[in-house]
Image (cartoon, rainbow, N blue to C red; front, side, top):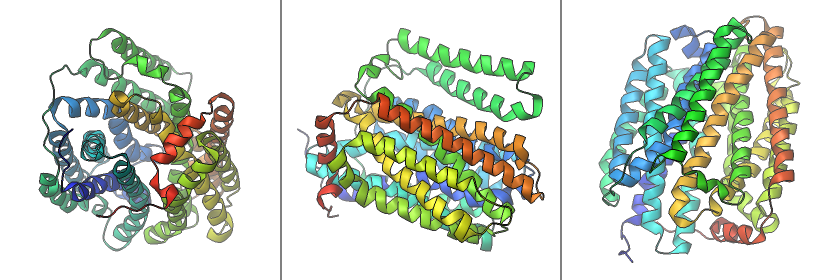
Length: 480
C-alpha cells in the first residue's frame, strides 16, 4: 500500500476548485447569452452554439481524457487541461465574431475534458487508502458541482450587468493561473504504456457534432431536405464506426464489455434524458426572463438563484439521506417525474407573466426533481463497475449526460424556433416558442422517469454500498 499523502486535503481543495470551475462554465454563460447575441451577431437559433460548442468538445473527448490520464499521468493531463482551458477563455473573451466565439468555447471544452477525468483519478489516488476518507472526499468534491452552478448564475449576472460579457471568460484566467501554481500539491505519478484510440475519439466527437449541426439547421433548410438527411446519416455512420472501432481495436476508449455491468445501461439512459430535459429548461428560462419579462443580466441571475440554492442544499445534504431510506431507483424515477411536473408548470408562461407567479414555483419544482435524480443516477452508473473500470464508468456517465444535453438543446431549439422563438420583439410568439420547448422537455423527463421505474433493477446491496460512500447521509464531516 502506498504511503498516505500528508497534503491530501489541501490537494482536494485544488481538485474541488477544478470541479467548481468546470461546472460553473456551464451556468455562468446562460445569463450573458442575450448580450453576446447582440454584440456578436448570433441568430436566435445559432445562439445555442455558445453552449453546445463547449458541451460537444467536453462530452465527446471525456473518454479520451480519461485514457490519456492513465497513459501520461493524471497530474500532467490535469495541468495540460488547465492550460488549454485558460487559452480557450482568452479566445472567447477577445472574440469579435460569432465564429471565433464558438472556437473559443470548443477549446474550453477540450480543456474541461482533460481536467474532469484526471481530477477524479487524482482524488482516487489520494484517498483510496481509507474508504471513510474517500467517502468524505467524494462528498466535498461532489458539493463543488452545485456550488459552481450557483456561483455561475450569480457571477454571470454581476459581470454582464456591471462590467461586460467578456468577463464571464476573463474570470477563468487568474483562477487558472492560481490552480496551475497549486498543482505541486497533487501527487506526481507516472503513466503506463499503452495505445491511444485516436480514431475512436475522432469518430464519436465528429458524429456528435454532425448530429447536433443537422438538428440545428433542420428548421431552416427542412427536415426532409437532402442536406439534413445526409448529415443525420453521416452522424449515424460515424457513431456506428465508433462502436465498430471499440469492438476491434486492442485498447479501446470504451471496452464494450463494461455494458454488462448491472444497471449501467439504465442509469446512463436516465442521465442522457435528464441532460436532454434539464439543460434546455435552463437555457430557455434564461431567455424568457430577459427577452420576454425584460430582466437585465443581474436580475436574471438573481431570479435563478433560488433554484440553484435548492439544488445545492438537496444534492449535498438531503439526497444522500433519502438514498439511505429508499435506494436509488425510486429517487431517479421519481425525481425525473417531479422534473417533468415542474416543466409542465413552466410551459404555462405568459407574455405578461411575472417572476413570482410564472417562474419561481415551477423552477423550484424542476430543481427539486433534478436534485433527487442526478446524484443517485450518477452513483448507480458507477457502483456496479469493478474497481479497475471505475474511471471508465465515470467517464461514460459524464459523457452520456453531456451528449444528452447537446442533442436535447439542439432538438428543443428547433422546436422552439418552429413555434416562434426566433421572432425577437414579438412577445406572444417568443413565449409560444419557449412554452413549446418546456412541454417537450417535460415529455422527455416523463419518459425517462417511467422508463427508469420499469426497466431499472433494484438492488439493496448496491443501495447499501452507495450509502456507505455518502457520508453526508450519516452526518459526517471532513476536516481539512
